[in-house]
Amino acid sequence: MKILKYFGLLAAVLTAAQTFAAPQRIGDFNLIDEKGTAHQFSKYAYQNALVVISQQNSCSTNAALFSEYRILQTKWDNEGVSFVMMNSTVGDTPEKLRNYDNSFNVNMPILVDDTQLVAELLGITKAGEVVVLDPKNMSILYRGPMDTPGSRGTPGTTFLKDTLAAAAAGETRNRDTVTVDFEAPADCIIDFPNAVTSADDVPDYETEIAPILIERCVVCHIEGGIGPFAMNSHQMVQGWSPMMREVLMTKRMPPAQVDPSIRHFENARNMPIEEVQKLVHWINAGSPRD
Ligand code: HEC
Image 1: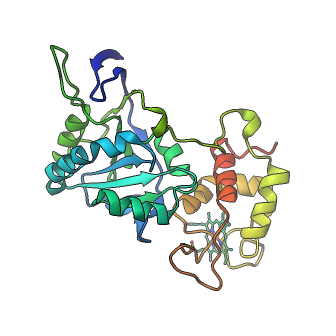
Image 2: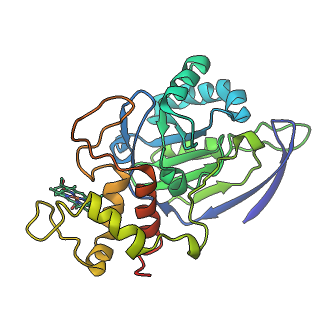
Image 3: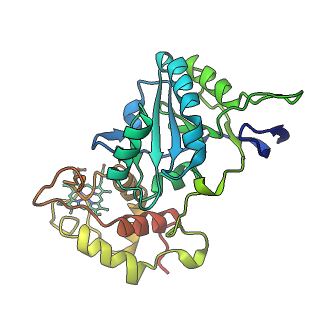
């Protein structure tokens, strides 16, 4: 691990600690953007990289950097790099995001991470953070700020540019995940009210998880039901947990989900946000019995 100090763009003194670690693999996810279009990570596999810029309506860093985002996008979108923003902020509704889009002319989809589970998956804690994903190998290549220009004898940083160059050259297989820490202003910090930060926060199987499964899944996932397995014991549910997390993160289950702010189906089976969070947090913790 190398430590590097530089003077930041936003007139604050930033300390960047940069780490290289074994490639961090991630599962698939599917999010709807502010206009109602679905974006599934694995469907970007024809691209060399997917750049996710974390966004929050109040974040001054995002507002200050729009021209930089545009320069980056113009430079790399011919090289097989796709760009999206992602909003994981409670209260930044799709309608507010459409207004934001109108005022900043964002020019990329803003994915609505309403469960905050994709931010947790990608390790995002603040808006302005940029994550570069490898959609072919399903891994994280880079997590950190935009590159910073050098000034007065201090070198700039080029971690982001270096990552994108490697991706464009098809050289990302087993590439280390590069993480660059940086400080963000208070208006960019994302609040995670339901995050699981200690063992005490893990939802309880009997009182919290089982009732959700009974209400949302067991109608089909029962002995003789149309689902391919029956959720009839803790052991069964635990065994299927990785698959359950995948279908929840990609919104395949429960079937027939629609974006309530865009369209409405009579029989839509949208699950409340807190229920999806509880199930995934419980699975992330290893699907414990108690
Ligand atoms: C309306 C019936 C129905 C409901 C409700 C339902 N499922 Fe399913 N589920 C199915 C069917 C049918 C399949 C097999 C076809 C498919 O994979 O789409 C399936 C498949 C699955 C699979 C296996 C996927 C795979 O690729 O093998 C998992 C895991 C799963 N469901 C989890 C859940 C969870 C978790 C819930 C509740 C949040 C749920 N299901 C609710 C009908 C349902």
